[in-house]
Image 1 (cartoon, each protein chain N blue to C red):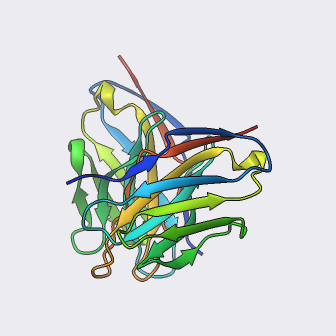
Image 2: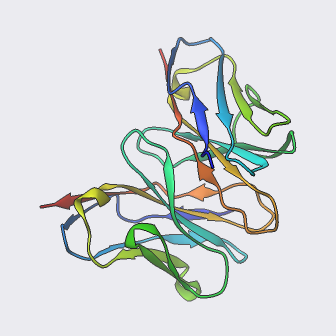
Length: 114
Length: 113
């Protein structure tokens, strides 16, 4: 059974650019959640995708958007990058089969915006 | 709104000594509670979880946690710490029917020889 994988591991962008981060969910999981972890902070919820639809969103602006594909993998897109977008972006997969949902995290993508 | 407080930013424990990391949550309904561990530059690894039932839950690596509803707490414990336990520990709260996990700011555990 493969775990959650993310790509790339590291990324450097300049302010104003756009970035796409990718996540492959754990085998058997149908739900992907994205979190932003700034330095020295706990992860903050960006949004969740379930069956290719957005299923909840945190306090992030619309320039943060996402997709989920039929194989349950997911992308996080960030437009018009700002310096404060520098962070570790974590993807978590889970299975919505019943109410007891456990999220399993990938290794993250570290984004640096210059 | 949900919130999680981890009062200790850093804790230093001698190798072989016992450990308790504190977590307090605020949530109106029955919470789902989690502890995750993060090594430097890594993602989060699930240590243990509580949904319902027995309030003392066992996790991986010899960790356990106890849910105390009256104190809104879910403290993490380990009887004997190993140097490899040095990492950052995050407590998180979720709930049935909600997609988000709300995390605390984390507690950095340092293990001294």
